[in-house]
Image 1 (cartoon, rainbow, N blue to C red):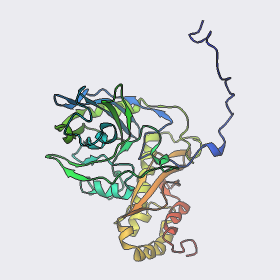
Image 2 (cartoon, one colour; image 1 turned 45 degrees about the vertical axis):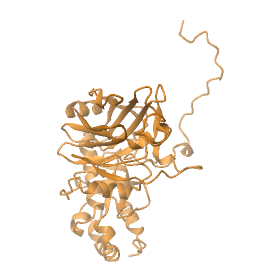
Image 3 (cartoon, rainbow, N blue to C red; image 1 turned 135 degrees about the horizontal axis):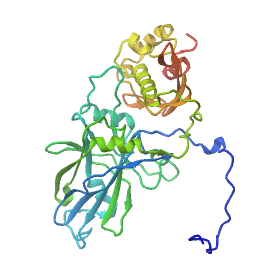
Length: 378
């Protein structure tokens, strides 16, 4: 007899549709802002304690690695009897404000520092905030701008701006002895008692090989800067154990016949998108990654003349490609210029041309057209 066999079923099971209607696929998600919901990540062993005092403790509730990034959960505990109203170091209610007071960041292999950013902070500002701590010397398109985002516990980040949404307070900036921090308003999940809270973060993309250092402090509770290191090899091994439950969806095509070496070809596709849309490069370098690129040189020069600051400072965030066949892929991406995002997250296309992946002409001109210049008209 099954465990639930003799328990009445209150609601009859509904038959599953043969396929999901297009109306249920939803808008294109931003994979750089939240963990994927179509995969189960691999769990990473990590030191449990991150820092503590006689009445405050911050521990690692979990580290879960995905091919696209790392989800980190912190648990913040107050000793019973020192919650809001009894501790003079907390000027406001713990349940409302203490999560904002916990400051969190990571040090990537190689030394780049990334600070947790409030989801209400514009994406362009987040990238600007990490620009002075990240290695920007690579103009080949081989690296991503890292992001560390607070993940709300009651829904995807991009779904927050619905009816009744209240814009979180703007963050404040501060600097610790060894790491610059930005305070933030964090979504949190209540713990087993009012003095236990869990904070979730999403680090994108998956860090390169090497140790990942987690850094936290809690000045309002007298917790000084503390850090622990997560084994980089264990992190990447856990990402390889991730299980895909169903296709990503979000406006992408259903996967078709993939190339023989998916990880290598996916990396080459992402490099093509970064090379095509990253600012501060010569026209030849950018257009070498675009299908029919030489024919778009005059249009690109016109756009750059009209918007020199935006095109020089342009950056692009690129998600995981979905291969329609070995020579065609669909890619979620977002182009960000100083102070703004060019139309939010889009789904672009890449094509294999003479052994090199290129951003399709239609995808590239679609981005240029947002400048207001008649790209397709010439």
